[in-house]
Length: 546
Image (cartoon, rainbow, N blue to C red):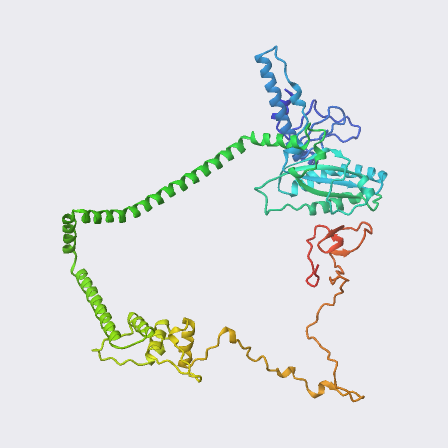
């Protein structure tokens, strides 16, 4: 009944054993109509005078965790009750109700808060103060300002240094430290972007809450670092699970696989993948069928032709004749024109063969005449056409080059050795034709830098640029001073040639820790070692190179 009552209780209605009364001794009594009392989330009122709320520190985030535990306890007890009703003599297993919490496998993200101090005494006092302020950090600052669906602080501490490896801490701070963990789950519906930044909340926590501690000794600080569930150190699982982190990860996987929502998502994803695969298989089958149809058509034609050759020519020839007679008149005219053109080309070819045989030509000249004929450069003798050399010179193409070279005599050089242009490679043939027409042809081997031997006017030294030495030796150049119209930033370089960063309002370079500074944190960042303004985006100046 205990779990059933708290499971179905309608908060923020207060839980009271008796009515509150004022005895008149001047002490404040809890009143639901008071403004501060009306904002309380889960009030449980004490029965004795003065009546007060015993759960004042409960927030909406912690109430969510309490309600989940009440529901889990009710399910376990209800299952045991049904087992006892079915078999009164059966032994009930109450150990499930008292199993340790699965905090370190229930959340996808975790935040470690490491409290460090210079000495053991300072660390104890500092840690007690910080622990009392964790409630405001988790419930008020992180829980309200960030898009989180659930957040929980693990109340047990670890006396180990669990923080960023790049944090600059001393050996004494590593010895005198304790670490707490906060688990949280991001609400993706409220999330904007892909990153969650908590620097502003940590900065406000240091300035508004931790700055009240007195005396604040240099070396007292709180360091935060984010982890994913698989990145948690092994030491946090020791003592909670027999097999350590490996057993914890296996249990987490079992819990996730048993989730009905996750099972439904996996089922839908698998169904969608099967549908896509079936559609792809169907598409391939259709493509194969189309290819088979295309390949079957030529095979059928060949089969018909073979049948006509084998002894059944009458049926196929009759069909061909009937199809030919059914065609239109324009088709006949086109076929007749094609026959006439083929006959003319055959006559021209025969005429060219007669001309070649009648004249005593070399093998190369005969080959040139044949190529000219095939390219359309040969004309019949009975046509009134005068061939001119400029006709092929206007068109600098392969056909025109071959035609022009075929009609030209072979040139004679100074040493009286003849060069046959038709035997040259094609690129050299084109170059010869271009040279004859009047173009200047320069090959890649004869590359010339135009103006390479020209000295520019402003490079020529004048007489005023030299100073005559008193000893009568050679003249010396004057010292030249360069003045820039644009003003440049003057920077200092170190021994390695890097620019030395002087700092600005958001960054103060420092090679060692010189004490706590309000609004700044000492770390090794993008601009080097020094004090960076907390919550401010690091911007490297344009005149600085690292």
